[in-house]
Image 1: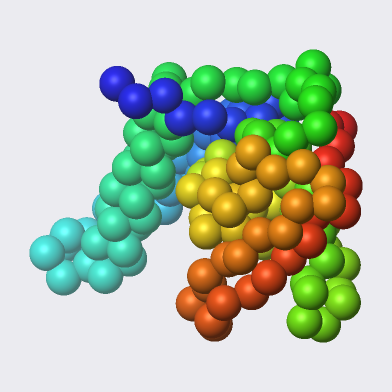
Image 2: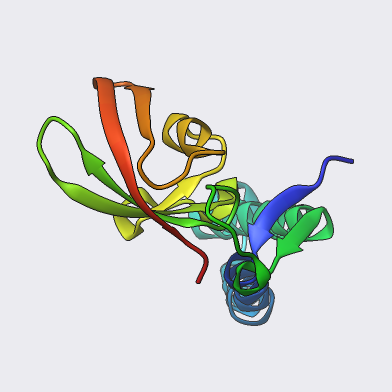
Amino acid sequence: MEKVPMTSAGYKALEDEIRFLKSVERPRIIKAISEARAHGDLSENAEYHAAKEQQGLNESRVAELEDKISRAEVIDVSKLSGDTVKFGATVTVVDEDTDEEAVYQIVGELEADVKAGRVSITSPLARALIGKSAGDTVEVVTPGGGKSYEVLKVEFR
């Protein structure tokens, strides 16, 4: 069974989503199914079929999240240190073409959100940054073409 690296914040977010799906969504869907059943003939009851489909989607999402949590390897970023980029690092880079600075944290696949500055450990940018230190330059092949970044700062927060 392959371990899934994630930060403690990512782990907590998964637990919160499971709790929501089980304690809020599941009872809501069960209520919708019972109300639709009360309308009679189930073979032509669109509300019943929609509620059953919602139930299937909800239960598969719960199973998927529980699988991820069971394989989670939680890494406490606050206990990490060093001056090279690794999982959990918050990296400040500057685009060498546009001089735009950006800050990214290297996180697990499930918690990646580029708009929030969290990039997946498997992304081209993260793979290029791993092992680099402040002052290093990296070339990244992105879907939009090649980019060149200089690493300004590596921190663990």
